[in-house]
Image 1 (spheres, rainbow, N blue to C red):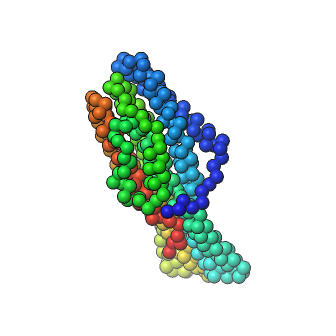
Image 2: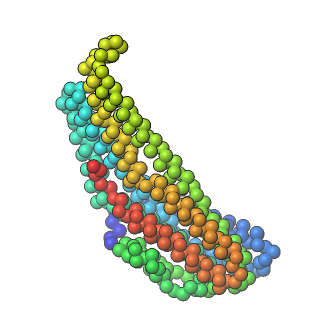
Image 3: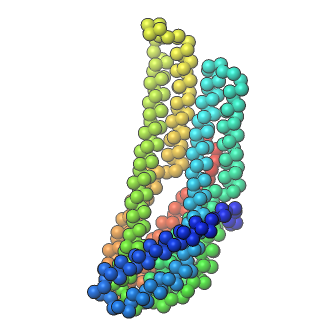
Length: 353
C-alpha cells in the first residue's frame, strides 16, 4: 500500500524530540546501574552505555519521525470525525429552525454549508489518508520502539528473523515491510554476558514494561473519563427531549395561565423534540465511533499482561532465559498493536446516518 501524503516535519522539532528521548533512555540506564551497583561489575556500565548509544543512533530518528507523523494525522482524524458528527446535527438544527419558525429562506444556506463541509471533510480526509497514515505510522512507530529494546537487550540471541504471526494481520500495510528493512540493516550486537543480567532486568522493568504500563494506566483513565463525559451529555439531551415531548403532549390550557402564546410554545417544543435527539445521537455516535470504553478495557487487560511479564523478568536467573522473556515482551506488544491496527483500521471518516 502506498503511504499517501505525509506531513513535512520541522527539523527542529524532530531534533528536540530525539534529544529528549535520548536523555530519557540514558537516564533510565544510569538509574538501573545505580540500583544494581552491588550486583554489577564496574566495567559493565561503559559497555552498556556504548551499546545503547549505537542502538539509539540507528533507531531513534526513525522512531521519532514515525511517532510525530502519527500524532499529526491522529489529531486531524479526530478533529475531522468530531466535526462530521456535529455538523450533521447542526444541519438538522438549522433546517428545523427555518421550517418551524418560518425564518428567511437564506437561513437554509447554513444547512447547505454544514452538509458541504461534511462532504469536504470526508473527501479531503480520505484522499489525503489522515486515518490510514495515522494507523500505519503508529504501527511502524510501535514496531520501532520494540526493535530498539530488542536490539539493545537481546542482540543476536534471537536470530535475524523479524517475522511474527501478528504481522499476518497487517500484511497489506507498507509499515511491515519498512520495519523489516530497518531491522535487517541494524547494528548486529552480540548477546550480553551474565554479568549484565541484573542491570538489564532492572532497565527492562522500568524503561520498557514500566513506561508501557504507565501509558496504559493513564490511557485507561482518560478514555473512561471521555466515555463518561460523552455519555452524560448524550443522556442529558435525551432527557431534555423526553421533558419537551411530555410538555408538548400536556393540555395547552395552562399556557394562558402563565401568559404565553400557545402557538409559540408549541413551535418551540416541536423544534426541541426534533433537534435535541439529533444532538444526543451525535454524541452517542462519537462515543461509539471512538470506542472510549473498549479502549479503556483494552488498556486494563494490557496492564495485567505487563504485570505478569514483569514478574517473569524479575524471576529470570540467566541471560538466555532473559532473552526469551524479551522475545515474549515484544510478542505481546506486537500482538496488541496488530489487533489495534485491525480494529481501528476500519474506522475511516464517513457520513453518519
